[in-house]
Amino acid sequence: MVKVLNLYEAKSRLSALVEEAAAGSEIVIAKAGVPRARLVPLKSRARRRPGAWKGRIRIASDFDAPLPPDVLAGFTGRKR
Image 1: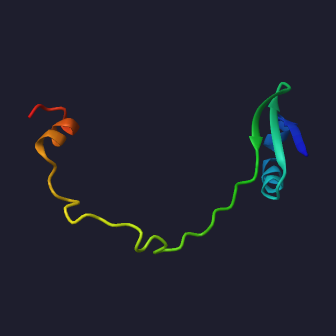
Image 2 (image 1 turned 180 degrees about the horizontal axis):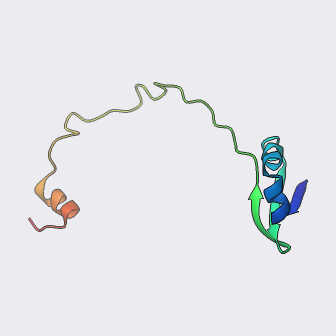
Image 3 (image 1 turned 135 degrees about the horizontal axis):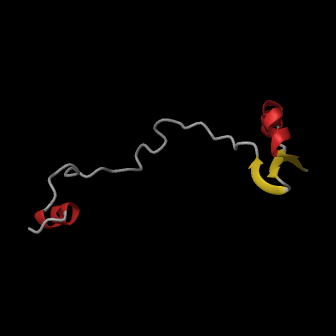
Protein backbone atom coordinates (compact mmCIF):
# COMPACT_ATOMS: atom_id res chain seq x y z
CA MET A 1 0.00 0.00 0.00
CA VAL A 2 1.27 3.46 -0.89
CA LYS A 3 1.34 6.13 1.79
CA VAL A 4 0.93 9.75 0.61
CA LEU A 5 2.26 12.57 2.81
CA ASN A 6 2.58 16.30 2.33
CA LEU A 7 6.03 17.80 2.16
CA TYR A 8 5.92 19.47 5.58
CA GLU A 9 4.96 16.25 7.34
CA ALA A 10 7.59 14.28 5.40
CA LYS A 11 10.32 16.76 6.44
CA SER A 12 9.44 16.42 10.10
CA ARG A 13 9.28 12.58 9.95
CA LEU A 14 12.07 11.86 7.46
CA SER A 15 14.03 9.41 9.63
CA ALA A 16 10.95 7.31 10.37
CA LEU A 17 9.88 7.39 6.71
CA VAL A 18 13.30 6.18 5.57
CA GLU A 19 13.03 3.24 7.96
CA GLU A 20 9.53 2.46 6.65
CA ALA A 21 10.77 2.52 3.08
CA ALA A 22 13.73 0.30 3.97
CA ALA A 23 11.23 -2.18 5.43
CA GLY A 24 9.43 -2.34 2.07
CA SER A 25 6.84 0.46 2.10
CA GLU A 26 6.39 2.95 -0.71
CA ILE A 27 5.85 6.57 0.33
CA VAL A 28 4.77 9.37 -1.99
CA ILE A 29 5.63 12.92 -0.98
CA ALA A 30 3.27 15.58 -2.33
CA LYS A 31 3.38 19.37 -2.44
CA ALA A 32 0.03 21.14 -2.55
CA GLY A 33 -1.60 17.78 -3.29
CA VAL A 34 0.60 17.11 -6.33
CA PRO A 35 2.93 14.07 -6.03
CA ARG A 36 6.54 15.22 -6.28
CA ALA A 37 8.71 12.32 -5.09
CA ARG A 38 8.58 8.66 -4.22
CA LEU A 39 10.52 7.06 -1.37
CA VAL A 40 11.10 3.35 -2.05
CA PRO A 41 13.46 0.69 -0.68
CA LEU A 42 16.76 0.11 -2.45
CA LYS A 43 17.23 -3.21 -4.18
CA SER A 44 19.94 -5.28 -2.57
CA ARG A 45 22.89 -6.13 -4.75
CA ALA A 46 24.52 -9.52 -4.89
CA ARG A 47 28.08 -9.53 -3.64
CA ARG A 48 30.65 -9.67 -6.39
CA ARG A 49 32.91 -12.69 -6.47
CA PRO A 50 36.48 -11.93 -7.58
CA GLY A 51 37.65 -14.04 -10.49
CA ALA A 52 34.17 -14.99 -11.71
CA TRP A 53 35.14 -14.23 -15.34
CA LYS A 54 38.50 -16.02 -15.19
CA GLY A 55 39.09 -17.92 -18.43
CA ARG A 56 36.23 -16.14 -20.25
CA ILE A 57 38.13 -13.02 -21.30
CA ARG A 58 41.18 -12.91 -23.54
CA ILE A 59 43.33 -9.81 -23.94
CA ALA A 60 45.26 -9.61 -27.20
CA SER A 61 49.04 -9.50 -26.96
CA ASP A 62 49.09 -6.20 -28.88
CA PHE A 63 46.44 -4.59 -26.67
CA ASP A 64 48.63 -1.64 -25.68
CA ALA A 65 50.41 -1.27 -29.03
CA PRO A 66 50.33 2.17 -30.67
CA LEU A 67 47.30 2.82 -32.87
CA PRO A 68 47.66 3.00 -36.64
CA PRO A 69 47.96 6.63 -37.85
CA ASP A 70 44.52 6.69 -39.53
CA VAL A 71 42.75 5.43 -36.38
CA LEU A 72 44.71 7.83 -34.18
CA ALA A 73 43.71 10.71 -36.48
CA GLY A 74 40.06 9.84 -35.91
CA PHE A 75 40.50 10.26 -32.16
CA THR A 76 42.56 13.43 -32.26
CA GLY A 77 40.72 15.16 -35.11
CA ARG A 78 43.96 15.74 -36.97
CA LYS A 79 44.61 14.81 -40.54
CA ARG A 80 47.33 12.25 -41.22
